[in-house]
Amino acid sequence: MDFQRLISLMASSSLFCLVLSLPNFAYGQYLTDRVPALFIFGDSVVDAGNNNELLTIIKANFPPYGRDFMNQRATGRFTNGQLVTDIIARRIGFPRYQAAYLSEEAEAENLLIGANFASAASGYYDATADLFLAIPLSKQLENYKEYQGKIVELIGAENASSLFSRGIHIVSTGSSDFLQNYYVNPVVNIPYRIDQFSNMLVQIYADFIEDLYGLGARRIGVTNLPPIGCLPAAMTLFGLGAGKDHECVEKLNRDAKLFNRKLNSTSELLKTRLPGLKLVLFDVYESLYTIIAGSSERGFSETRRGCCGTGLIETSVLCNDLSLGTCANATEYVFWDGFHPSEAANKFIVDDLISAAYSLVYN
Ligand SMILES: *[C@@H]1O[C@H](CO)[C@@H](O)[C@H](O)[C@H]1NC(C)=O
Ligand SMILES: *[C@@H]1O[C@H](CO)[C@@H](O)[C@H](O)[C@H]1NC(C)=O
Ligand SMILES: *[C@@H]1O[C@H](CO)[C@@H](O)[C@H](O)[C@H]1NC(C)=O
Image (cartoon, rainbow, N blue to C red):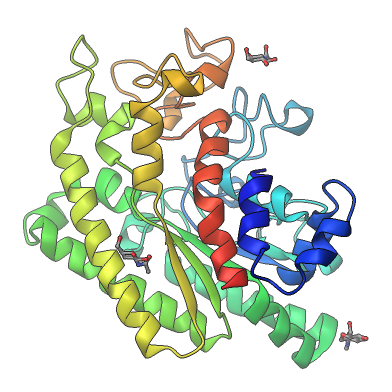
């Protein structure tokens, strides 16, 4: 935890002295008083196991996924250890991670710290999820409504509404709309130019935020698109191949930046239109790009290949127990597989994003 930064952010808060008087790390308790829950929506970057329960082939509930997680367990998380949202949950001080909503842990008391509705291979556009039998974003919202009903039953309408407005809603999706849909699917890339497609996605995003707001959400953090042209699988599929020129695909990064600009201006509009809404964008593009560019200072030796399942055609489906050449220790790899950052990279990403997360709570 960047304690220095936390303190400087909280210096403006009247409760500053209270925090300082607590023993080391006990501020976790304090933060869960302020942020009682996390509600997580999106794709494989934040899916904590919902896809385990689906017919989809996009799953990660087998080794070597999870080999650096608690008890070396493959939970369905698409990385070797913790997801970005897991690290945030721990830093806030939750006693456990928010349960995948479709899992059996998602019941009773466990639901009171929020829940995870995300599904790998989904996007803003429902049709992206449909291609892989994942849970579309609109269905994630339906599940959230159902969840809210359960919470009202558990703690009453008044306490529930406080949980929904004070909890942080995290939305992290969009990469699949491009990598697993637009770039490979003539059904969308013939009728739509990339900017039209982006406009459509951003419109869905705006509607989604308005729906969350209508359900009582007041603190929402949204990740922008990462540099999708630097994901190992994208370099292999859309670049010059896995040979010596395994370099970021500039065109894809330009598309991501275009989308991110639209996401930014739409977010600014939403803030003016929806009173009392705190909405921040987590700049994952900048964070991941900087980690890749300055990798050696941060202890990474490999930025272009995933630790697992890297080959000619890299998809997460290719990372499994039979994969050849899986690296021995993922801490030196920015990417765990062809699409997903390693836990080591996720920790740096959280360091970069955490001040934006605090601004949802303290500003
Ligand atoms: C609502 O919260 C208050 C304060 O924490 C608690 O005393 C009360 O029992 C809760 N109401 C219900 C219905 O659980
Ligand atoms: C949009 O971008 C500007 C300039 O980088 C930034 O100051 C602002 O916070 C961004 N808006 C959101 C909602 O993140
Ligand atoms: C991986 O390497 C890091 C840094 O060198 C080390 O701290 C860690 O214990 C290693 N993990 C395993 C599983 O060997």
